[in-house]
Length: 443
Image (cartoon, rainbow, N blue to C red; front, side, top):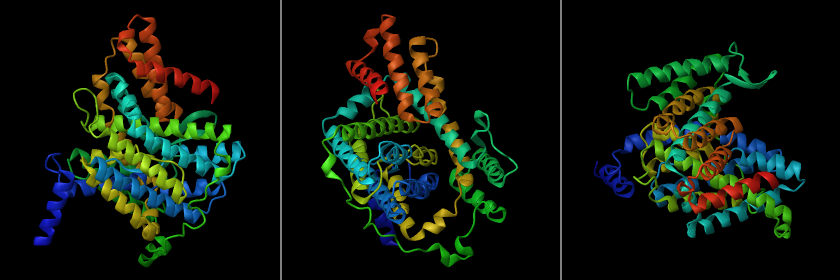
Protein backbone atom coordinates (compact mmCIF):
# COMPACT_ATOMS: atom_id res chain seq x y z
CA UNK A 1 0.00 0.00 0.00
CA UNK A 2 2.82 2.38 0.93
CA UNK A 3 4.64 1.74 -2.37
CA UNK A 4 1.46 2.60 -4.28
CA UNK A 5 1.16 5.87 -2.37
CA UNK A 6 4.81 6.62 -3.04
CA UNK A 7 4.27 6.08 -6.78
CA UNK A 8 1.29 8.42 -6.79
CA UNK A 9 3.30 10.96 -4.80
CA UNK A 10 6.14 10.76 -7.34
CA UNK A 11 3.73 11.30 -10.22
CA UNK A 12 2.15 14.24 -8.36
CA UNK A 13 5.53 15.89 -7.80
CA UNK A 14 6.81 15.19 -11.31
CA UNK A 15 3.73 16.24 -13.27
CA UNK A 16 2.06 18.70 -10.83
CA UNK A 17 -1.30 16.97 -11.16
CA UNK A 18 -3.22 18.92 -8.51
CA UNK A 19 -1.87 22.23 -9.83
CA UNK A 20 -3.25 21.28 -13.24
CA UNK A 21 -6.56 20.10 -11.75
CA UNK A 22 -6.20 16.49 -12.83
CA UNK A 23 -5.34 13.07 -11.40
CA UNK A 24 -3.47 9.88 -12.30
CA UNK A 25 -6.54 8.00 -13.55
CA UNK A 26 -7.62 10.85 -15.83
CA UNK A 27 -4.13 11.30 -17.28
CA UNK A 28 -3.60 7.60 -17.99
CA UNK A 29 -7.03 7.31 -19.59
CA UNK A 30 -6.23 10.36 -21.73
CA UNK A 31 -2.93 8.75 -22.77
CA UNK A 32 -4.72 5.57 -23.84
CA UNK A 33 -7.23 7.61 -25.84
CA UNK A 34 -4.52 9.61 -27.59
CA UNK A 35 -2.62 6.45 -28.48
CA UNK A 36 -5.67 4.72 -29.90
CA UNK A 37 -6.51 7.66 -32.17
CA UNK A 38 -2.95 7.84 -33.55
CA UNK A 39 -1.90 4.15 -33.48
CA UNK A 40 -2.78 3.93 -37.19
CA UNK A 41 0.66 5.43 -37.87
CA UNK A 42 2.19 2.08 -36.85
CA UNK A 43 0.53 0.49 -39.86
CA UNK A 44 0.53 3.37 -42.34
CA UNK A 45 4.10 4.67 -41.92
CA UNK A 46 5.94 1.35 -42.44
CA UNK A 47 3.81 0.59 -45.48
CA UNK A 48 4.43 3.99 -47.04
CA UNK A 49 8.21 4.03 -46.43
CA UNK A 50 8.46 0.42 -47.62
CA UNK A 51 7.36 1.72 -51.03
CA UNK A 52 10.54 3.82 -50.98
CA UNK A 53 12.60 0.63 -50.52
CA UNK A 54 12.94 0.57 -46.73
CA UNK A 55 12.55 -2.58 -44.63
CA UNK A 56 8.95 -2.55 -43.40
CA UNK A 57 9.63 -4.32 -40.10
CA UNK A 58 12.54 -2.01 -39.32
CA UNK A 59 10.44 1.07 -40.03
CA UNK A 60 7.70 -0.28 -37.75
CA UNK A 61 10.20 -0.57 -34.88
CA UNK A 62 11.70 2.84 -35.67
CA UNK A 63 8.23 4.43 -35.74
CA UNK A 64 7.27 2.99 -32.35
CA UNK A 65 10.58 3.71 -30.59
CA UNK A 66 11.02 7.26 -31.94
CA UNK A 67 7.42 8.07 -30.97
CA UNK A 68 8.10 6.81 -27.44
CA UNK A 69 11.31 8.84 -27.16
CA UNK A 70 9.56 12.01 -28.34
CA UNK A 71 6.58 11.46 -26.02
CA UNK A 72 8.92 10.92 -23.06
CA UNK A 73 10.81 14.11 -23.95
CA UNK A 74 7.52 16.03 -24.09
CA UNK A 75 6.43 14.53 -20.77
CA UNK A 76 9.56 15.25 -18.76
CA UNK A 77 10.83 18.42 -20.45
CA UNK A 78 7.59 20.33 -21.02
CA UNK A 79 4.99 18.47 -18.90
CA UNK A 80 2.41 18.79 -21.66
CA UNK A 81 -0.13 16.16 -22.84
CA UNK A 82 1.03 16.32 -26.46
CA UNK A 83 1.97 13.06 -28.20
CA UNK A 84 4.36 12.75 -31.13
CA UNK A 85 5.10 10.27 -33.92
CA UNK A 86 6.15 10.15 -37.57
CA UNK A 87 4.03 12.73 -39.33
CA UNK A 88 1.49 11.98 -42.03
CA UNK A 89 2.12 14.11 -45.10
CA UNK A 90 5.80 14.26 -44.24
CA UNK A 91 6.11 10.52 -44.88
CA UNK A 92 4.25 10.94 -48.17
CA UNK A 93 6.67 13.72 -49.19
CA UNK A 94 9.55 11.39 -48.21
CA UNK A 95 8.36 8.56 -50.47
CA UNK A 96 6.47 10.12 -53.35
CA UNK A 97 8.32 13.43 -53.81
CA UNK A 98 11.92 12.80 -52.76
CA UNK A 99 12.32 9.13 -53.74
CA UNK A 100 9.84 8.70 -56.60
CA UNK A 101 9.58 12.29 -57.89
CA UNK A 102 13.22 13.44 -57.57
CA UNK A 103 14.77 10.00 -58.01
CA UNK A 104 16.84 10.00 -54.83
CA UNK A 105 17.50 7.07 -52.52
CA UNK A 106 15.66 6.66 -49.24
CA UNK A 107 19.03 7.13 -47.55
CA UNK A 108 19.21 10.60 -49.12
CA UNK A 109 15.74 11.42 -47.77
CA UNK A 110 16.65 10.11 -44.32
CA UNK A 111 19.76 12.31 -44.30
CA UNK A 112 17.59 15.34 -45.08
CA UNK A 113 15.37 14.46 -42.10
CA UNK A 114 18.46 14.24 -39.86
CA UNK A 115 19.74 17.67 -40.97
CA UNK A 116 16.26 19.13 -40.52
CA UNK A 117 16.17 17.74 -36.98
CA UNK A 118 19.53 19.31 -36.15
CA UNK A 119 18.39 22.68 -37.51
CA UNK A 120 15.14 22.28 -35.58
CA UNK A 121 17.12 21.95 -32.33
CA UNK A 122 19.29 24.97 -33.16
CA UNK A 123 16.20 27.05 -33.96
CA UNK A 124 14.74 26.01 -30.61
CA UNK A 125 17.77 27.31 -28.74
CA UNK A 126 17.70 30.70 -30.51
CA UNK A 127 13.94 31.08 -29.85
CA UNK A 128 13.13 31.39 -33.57
CA UNK A 129 10.10 29.12 -33.34
CA UNK A 130 8.91 30.81 -30.17
CA UNK A 131 9.00 34.14 -32.03
CA UNK A 132 6.82 32.64 -34.76
CA UNK A 133 4.34 31.23 -32.23
CA UNK A 134 4.08 34.50 -30.33
CA UNK A 135 3.80 36.66 -33.47
CA UNK A 136 0.55 35.02 -34.60
CA UNK A 137 -2.42 37.26 -33.66
CA UNK A 138 -4.97 35.90 -31.17
CA UNK A 139 -7.79 35.73 -33.74
CA UNK A 140 -5.62 33.53 -35.98
CA UNK A 141 -4.66 31.34 -33.02
CA UNK A 142 -8.34 30.75 -32.34
CA UNK A 143 -8.92 30.09 -36.04
CA UNK A 144 -6.12 27.49 -36.00
CA UNK A 145 -7.98 25.59 -33.28
CA UNK A 146 -11.20 25.61 -35.32
CA UNK A 147 -9.40 24.64 -38.54
CA UNK A 148 -7.69 21.74 -36.78
CA UNK A 149 -11.12 20.64 -35.56
CA UNK A 150 -12.43 20.42 -39.12
CA UNK A 151 -9.21 18.72 -40.21
CA UNK A 152 -9.47 16.08 -37.46
CA UNK A 153 -13.14 15.46 -38.25
CA UNK A 154 -12.29 14.99 -41.94
CA UNK A 155 -9.62 12.43 -40.99
CA UNK A 156 -12.22 10.59 -38.93
CA UNK A 157 -14.83 10.57 -41.69
CA UNK A 158 -12.33 9.37 -44.32
CA UNK A 159 -10.78 6.72 -42.03
CA UNK A 160 -14.25 5.22 -41.59
CA UNK A 161 -15.16 5.42 -45.27
CA UNK A 162 -18.09 7.74 -44.54
CA UNK A 163 -16.50 10.36 -46.78
CA UNK A 164 -14.50 9.34 -49.87
CA UNK A 165 -12.75 11.02 -52.77
CA UNK A 166 -13.25 10.47 -56.49
CA UNK A 167 -16.36 9.23 -58.25
CA UNK A 168 -16.80 12.44 -60.20
CA UNK A 169 -16.60 14.70 -57.14
CA UNK A 170 -13.77 16.06 -55.01
CA UNK A 171 -15.35 14.54 -51.92
CA UNK A 172 -18.51 12.52 -51.59
CA UNK A 173 -20.51 10.26 -49.35
CA UNK A 174 -19.06 6.78 -49.06
CA UNK A 175 -20.92 3.53 -49.51
CA UNK A 176 -22.92 3.33 -46.28
CA UNK A 177 -23.98 -0.23 -47.10
CA UNK A 178 -20.44 -1.29 -46.16
CA UNK A 179 -19.73 -2.55 -42.65
CA UNK A 180 -16.97 -0.07 -41.72
CA UNK A 181 -19.06 3.11 -42.18
CA UNK A 182 -21.96 1.43 -40.40
CA UNK A 183 -19.77 0.50 -37.41
CA UNK A 184 -18.40 4.06 -37.29
CA UNK A 185 -21.91 5.56 -37.28
CA UNK A 186 -22.95 3.19 -34.48
CA UNK A 187 -19.78 4.19 -32.61
CA UNK A 188 -20.62 7.86 -33.10
CA UNK A 189 -24.05 7.33 -31.54
CA UNK A 190 -22.55 5.37 -28.63
CA UNK A 191 -19.87 7.99 -27.99
CA UNK A 192 -22.45 10.78 -28.19
CA UNK A 193 -24.64 8.93 -25.66
CA UNK A 194 -21.70 8.48 -23.27
CA UNK A 195 -20.84 12.18 -23.55
CA UNK A 196 -24.46 13.22 -23.01
CA UNK A 197 -24.52 11.05 -19.88
CA UNK A 198 -21.25 12.71 -18.79
CA UNK A 199 -19.40 9.38 -18.55
CA UNK A 200 -15.74 9.99 -17.70
CA UNK A 201 -13.55 8.54 -20.44
CA UNK A 202 -16.38 8.63 -22.99
CA UNK A 203 -14.04 8.75 -26.01
CA UNK A 204 -11.90 5.89 -24.73
CA UNK A 205 -14.86 3.65 -23.93
CA UNK A 206 -16.44 4.61 -27.24
CA UNK A 207 -13.37 3.26 -29.08
CA UNK A 208 -13.39 0.01 -27.08
CA UNK A 209 -17.13 -0.62 -27.52
CA UNK A 210 -16.99 0.20 -31.24
CA UNK A 211 -14.07 -2.20 -31.69
CA UNK A 212 -16.03 -4.96 -29.95
CA UNK A 213 -19.09 -4.27 -32.11
CA UNK A 214 -16.86 -4.57 -35.15
CA UNK A 215 -15.72 -8.11 -34.22
CA UNK A 216 -18.81 -10.07 -35.33
CA UNK A 217 -19.18 -7.77 -38.35
CA UNK A 218 -15.65 -8.45 -39.59
CA UNK A 219 -14.49 -4.84 -39.25
CA UNK A 220 -12.20 -5.63 -36.30
CA UNK A 221 -10.88 -9.06 -35.38
CA UNK A 222 -8.79 -10.97 -32.86
CA UNK A 223 -5.31 -11.60 -34.31
CA UNK A 224 -4.97 -15.18 -35.60
CA UNK A 225 -8.31 -15.86 -33.95
CA UNK A 226 -6.72 -16.50 -30.56
CA UNK A 227 -5.50 -14.57 -27.55
CA UNK A 228 -1.89 -15.78 -27.78
CA UNK A 229 -1.76 -14.33 -31.27
CA UNK A 230 -1.50 -10.83 -29.81
CA UNK A 231 2.20 -11.28 -29.05
CA UNK A 232 5.00 -10.80 -31.58
CA UNK A 233 8.77 -10.42 -31.49
CA UNK A 234 10.03 -6.84 -32.08
CA UNK A 235 11.39 -6.37 -35.63
CA UNK A 236 15.09 -5.56 -36.13
CA UNK A 237 16.28 -2.01 -36.81
CA UNK A 238 19.50 -3.16 -38.47
CA UNK A 239 18.40 -2.51 -42.05
CA UNK A 240 17.19 1.07 -41.50
CA UNK A 241 19.02 2.59 -38.51
CA UNK A 242 21.81 5.11 -39.20
CA UNK A 243 21.54 4.61 -42.97
CA UNK A 244 22.65 8.07 -44.10
CA UNK A 245 24.01 9.38 -47.40
CA UNK A 246 26.37 12.18 -46.44
CA UNK A 247 28.03 12.43 -49.87
CA UNK A 248 25.21 14.67 -51.17
CA UNK A 249 24.59 16.96 -48.19
CA UNK A 250 25.95 20.05 -49.97
CA UNK A 251 23.79 19.73 -53.08
CA UNK A 252 20.93 22.04 -54.08
CA UNK A 253 18.48 19.13 -54.01
CA UNK A 254 19.41 18.41 -50.39
CA UNK A 255 18.80 22.07 -49.52
CA UNK A 256 15.36 22.03 -51.15
CA UNK A 257 14.31 18.73 -49.57
CA UNK A 258 15.62 19.69 -46.13
CA UNK A 259 13.85 23.07 -46.24
CA UNK A 260 10.59 21.44 -47.30
CA UNK A 261 10.75 18.99 -44.38
CA UNK A 262 11.63 21.85 -42.04
CA UNK A 263 8.83 24.14 -43.25
CA UNK A 264 6.06 21.57 -42.89
CA UNK A 265 7.41 20.30 -39.56
CA UNK A 266 7.71 23.78 -38.02
CA UNK A 267 4.25 24.96 -38.98
CA UNK A 268 2.47 21.65 -38.41
CA UNK A 269 3.96 21.58 -34.91
CA UNK A 270 3.21 25.23 -34.16
CA UNK A 271 -0.32 24.87 -35.52
CA UNK A 272 -0.98 21.78 -33.42
CA UNK A 273 0.43 23.37 -30.27
CA UNK A 274 -1.67 26.49 -30.82
CA UNK A 275 -4.88 24.59 -31.53
CA UNK A 276 -4.67 21.97 -28.79
CA UNK A 277 -3.26 24.26 -26.08
CA UNK A 278 -5.89 26.88 -26.90
CA UNK A 279 -8.65 24.32 -26.45
CA UNK A 280 -7.11 23.16 -23.16
CA UNK A 281 -6.87 26.75 -21.88
CA UNK A 282 -3.09 26.49 -21.58
CA UNK A 283 -2.33 29.82 -23.25
CA UNK A 284 -1.73 32.76 -20.93
CA UNK A 285 -3.50 36.14 -21.15
CA UNK A 286 -1.08 37.22 -23.90
CA UNK A 287 -1.74 34.15 -26.01
CA UNK A 288 1.64 32.61 -25.15
CA UNK A 289 2.29 29.00 -24.17
CA UNK A 290 4.50 28.56 -21.09
CA UNK A 291 7.32 26.05 -21.67
CA UNK A 292 6.87 26.44 -25.42
CA UNK A 293 10.62 26.17 -25.91
CA UNK A 294 10.72 22.82 -24.13
CA UNK A 295 7.77 21.52 -26.17
CA UNK A 296 9.42 22.50 -29.44
CA UNK A 297 12.73 21.01 -28.32
CA UNK A 298 11.00 17.70 -27.55
CA UNK A 299 9.63 17.73 -31.09
CA UNK A 300 13.11 18.33 -32.51
CA UNK A 301 14.61 15.54 -30.39
CA UNK A 302 11.95 13.19 -31.76
CA UNK A 303 12.86 14.09 -35.35
CA UNK A 304 16.58 13.45 -34.76
CA UNK A 305 15.87 10.17 -32.97
CA UNK A 306 13.53 9.10 -35.76
CA UNK A 307 16.11 9.82 -38.48
CA UNK A 308 18.78 7.86 -36.60
CA UNK A 309 16.46 4.91 -36.01
CA UNK A 310 15.10 4.91 -39.57
CA UNK A 311 11.83 6.80 -40.01
CA UNK A 312 10.56 10.06 -41.47
CA UNK A 313 10.06 13.31 -39.56
CA UNK A 314 8.53 13.01 -36.09
CA UNK A 315 6.08 15.77 -35.22
CA UNK A 316 3.47 16.72 -32.62
CA UNK A 317 0.19 14.97 -33.40
CA UNK A 318 -3.09 16.75 -33.84
CA UNK A 319 -4.76 13.63 -32.40
CA UNK A 320 -3.39 14.78 -29.02
CA UNK A 321 -6.63 16.76 -28.90
CA UNK A 322 -8.47 13.50 -28.18
CA UNK A 323 -6.50 13.01 -24.97
CA UNK A 324 -6.97 16.65 -24.00
CA UNK A 325 -10.71 16.20 -24.57
CA UNK A 326 -10.59 13.33 -22.07
CA UNK A 327 -9.06 15.65 -19.47
CA UNK A 328 -5.33 15.15 -20.10
CA UNK A 329 -3.44 18.22 -18.95
CA UNK A 330 0.09 17.09 -18.07
CA UNK A 331 3.05 15.11 -19.30
CA UNK A 332 1.65 11.97 -17.69
CA UNK A 333 -0.71 11.74 -20.67
CA UNK A 334 2.24 11.90 -23.09
CA UNK A 335 4.21 9.44 -20.93
CA UNK A 336 1.34 6.94 -21.06
CA UNK A 337 1.13 7.27 -24.83
CA UNK A 338 4.88 6.72 -25.12
CA UNK A 339 4.74 3.57 -22.99
CA UNK A 340 1.96 2.22 -25.22
CA UNK A 341 4.12 2.80 -28.31
CA UNK A 342 6.83 0.65 -26.69
CA UNK A 343 4.28 -2.04 -25.81
CA UNK A 344 3.17 -2.00 -29.44
CA UNK A 345 6.56 -3.52 -30.34
CA UNK A 346 5.46 -6.83 -28.79
CA UNK A 347 1.68 -6.36 -28.89
CA UNK A 348 1.31 -5.02 -32.42
CA UNK A 349 -1.40 -7.54 -33.44
CA UNK A 350 -3.54 -6.46 -30.47
CA UNK A 351 -3.34 -2.77 -31.33
CA UNK A 352 -3.84 -3.68 -34.96
CA UNK A 353 -7.29 -5.06 -34.19
CA UNK A 354 -8.60 -1.51 -33.53
CA UNK A 355 -9.93 -0.38 -36.93
CA UNK A 356 -10.19 3.13 -38.30
CA UNK A 357 -13.96 2.78 -37.96
CA UNK A 358 -13.55 2.53 -34.17
CA UNK A 359 -11.31 5.57 -33.75
CA UNK A 360 -13.27 7.67 -36.28
CA UNK A 361 -16.10 8.59 -33.84
CA UNK A 362 -13.56 9.94 -31.33
CA UNK A 363 -11.87 12.06 -34.01
CA UNK A 364 -15.20 13.40 -35.26
CA UNK A 365 -16.31 14.33 -31.74
CA UNK A 366 -12.93 15.97 -31.03
CA UNK A 367 -13.53 18.03 -34.17
CA UNK A 368 -16.68 19.32 -32.47
CA UNK A 369 -14.76 20.12 -29.27
CA UNK A 370 -12.18 22.12 -31.22
CA UNK A 371 -14.85 24.35 -32.79
CA UNK A 372 -15.70 26.34 -29.64
CA UNK A 373 -13.12 29.17 -30.14
CA UNK A 374 -15.00 30.29 -33.25
CA UNK A 375 -17.37 32.14 -30.90
CA UNK A 376 -14.50 34.38 -29.82
CA UNK A 377 -13.24 35.32 -33.31
CA UNK A 378 -13.98 38.91 -34.39
CA UNK A 379 -16.13 38.44 -37.50
CA UNK A 380 -17.10 42.10 -37.81
CA UNK A 381 -13.61 43.37 -38.75
CA UNK A 382 -12.97 41.83 -42.17
CA UNK A 383 -9.20 42.30 -41.86
CA UNK A 384 -9.50 39.84 -38.98
CA UNK A 385 -12.40 37.70 -40.21
CA UNK A 386 -11.13 36.87 -43.72
CA UNK A 387 -7.68 35.62 -42.59
CA UNK A 388 -9.35 33.64 -39.79
CA UNK A 389 -11.80 32.11 -42.28
CA UNK A 390 -9.03 31.18 -44.71
CA UNK A 391 -7.04 29.60 -41.89
CA UNK A 392 -10.05 27.50 -40.90
CA UNK A 393 -11.13 26.26 -44.31
CA UNK A 394 -7.72 25.72 -45.91
CA UNK A 395 -6.63 23.19 -43.29
CA UNK A 396 -9.19 20.55 -44.35
CA UNK A 397 -9.36 21.74 -47.98
CA UNK A 398 -5.57 21.60 -48.49
CA UNK A 399 -5.29 18.66 -46.05
CA UNK A 400 -2.51 20.51 -44.26
CA UNK A 401 -2.27 22.46 -41.02
CA UNK A 402 0.80 24.26 -42.37
CA UNK A 403 -0.94 25.49 -45.54
CA UNK A 404 -3.89 26.75 -43.49
CA UNK A 405 -1.48 28.88 -41.45
CA UNK A 406 0.17 30.14 -44.64
CA UNK A 407 -3.10 31.34 -46.16
CA UNK A 408 -4.19 32.93 -42.89
CA UNK A 409 -0.95 34.76 -42.15
CA UNK A 410 -0.31 36.02 -45.69
CA UNK A 411 -3.88 37.31 -46.08
CA UNK A 412 -3.66 38.92 -42.63
CA UNK A 413 -0.49 40.84 -43.57
CA UNK A 414 -1.86 41.92 -46.96
CA UNK A 415 -5.25 43.07 -45.70
CA UNK A 416 -3.85 44.91 -42.69
CA UNK A 417 -1.25 46.68 -44.85
CA UNK A 418 -3.54 47.81 -47.68
CA UNK A 419 -6.23 49.01 -45.26
CA UNK A 420 -3.80 51.20 -43.29
CA UNK A 421 -3.67 48.95 -40.22
CA UNK A 422 -0.05 47.92 -40.55
CA UNK A 423 0.52 48.72 -36.87
CA UNK A 424 -1.35 45.47 -36.12
CA UNK A 425 1.33 43.47 -37.97
CA UNK A 426 4.61 42.55 -36.30
CA UNK A 427 7.95 42.53 -38.10
CA UNK A 428 8.07 38.75 -37.75
CA UNK A 429 4.72 38.45 -39.54
CA UNK A 430 6.02 40.51 -42.47
CA UNK A 431 9.14 38.35 -42.77
CA UNK A 432 7.12 35.14 -42.61
CA UNK A 433 4.61 36.36 -45.20
CA UNK A 434 7.43 37.08 -47.67
CA UNK A 435 9.01 33.67 -47.00
CA UNK A 436 5.66 31.93 -47.46
CA UNK A 437 5.07 33.60 -50.83
CA UNK A 438 8.60 32.73 -52.01
CA UNK A 439 8.15 29.17 -50.85
CA UNK A 440 4.89 28.75 -52.79
CA UNK A 441 6.44 30.25 -55.94
CA UNK A 442 9.78 28.44 -56.01
CA UNK A 443 9.30 25.16 -54.12
